[in-house]
Figure (tube, rainbow over the protein chains, first blue to last red):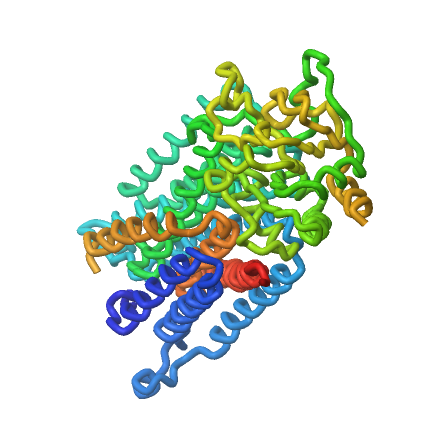
Length: 496
Length: 97
């Protein structure tokens, strides 16, 4: 069967699809162009799918030549099965996308990544079992013995890499999903000697892929697949809940590389372009997340850091220092008298779903003539941009929401810094204490604000890094100890 | 296409990806992940080929069913990914003045 790339029209269509995907990402440079970008993505995908359906329509075996010539040899039963498969997937996908709560977005993305990974594994397996259909094998007629199908050596490497990356993406994303969804504790699970085990498995996979070029026996292919499922699992279980933004971005990257590897196998430019885009996107997001925590990628991957935020797992504060407790009424009074209030949200806001009532509070303050801004740290939440989506959901205009470097200098001229569900991202120890595990992490200078209002569930938990926070004990800090949502509701009531 | 031309597309696309993704505003990083997830499901192309191919014997039949299953999974992702991205993007609003 002719391979895809040999049909010039199809190759052109795939190229156009690839360009549409580039434009889709380009659109995300600003919220105003983003919806157009998303439509470009849909157009690109439609082009890719329709082209494939037309060029690779299922054919009836043994149809008469005349029928083949006029295109009357289409196997409509098989075509129906394919359309039904698309329909089933579409129904599941659309219903899920409509119903999912915005706070559950990190786990949804992890679940979607796992599907890409598994699809890549299935496609690689299908290509291995039926290489002729993919145009990646030739009949070999040796001098001695039966003729057999030999898969091209380059294709074997691509297929091996594709199935390995796909399987890692799948099992890794499943673990990430379970951790984000709370089915599995956020605390890192440490196996003894895990670095040695992981390294050995990785070397084993690469060795087998190399050997696969010499010997296309099925056991090699399936062993690569099995080992890759295992390594994806082993790589993610020691990583703590708070490091999930990096993990989710990394798995995003892997799903792209898996698609690219399969694109090499199929000589398909749409898949290669997309794979490269998605691969670099995930890699850049991982880099941004690591930089925002001042940690190296290697140290995150090595794991063992960061249980659940605010869970108190990090141990109690060692020394007892005096701190001030405030009430909702105090907070309401202080903020209503302010010129400017900066709100710093964190994962705790997402956990207690406080974003809507928070916006109500901001509206009331604005009515009183207070300027309200939101300050978002790159690693706030469980995935890149998590806080921004939640605030957008609560109808907070995006031009009131600022990134770390754009707003940090304003705290000195701000009357009230309102911290809700964040902790480590406002800890001055990151700047002053060289022995602190979060030393070097860029943080908000909330301590420079005239007053700090700090919503926290209790004084026990000290953030995921297990570091005490000097801000709690400042003279100008008022601790508001309660569930974030309840506290903000009370403040709204007090504002009247 | 020979291996070198495919590799060229790949390498150039990596550079395009690098510059395009850095220009994405951090506020849209979650939609970025959702949409990249949707477009990486272009792997459905491979799944469709496998599902449409007539095969030789048992291996061919298995290959076809694996392909159909992959079509379902990739479709979940495509439709779900674009729909959830659209839903998120529709929420981003400017201040009403």
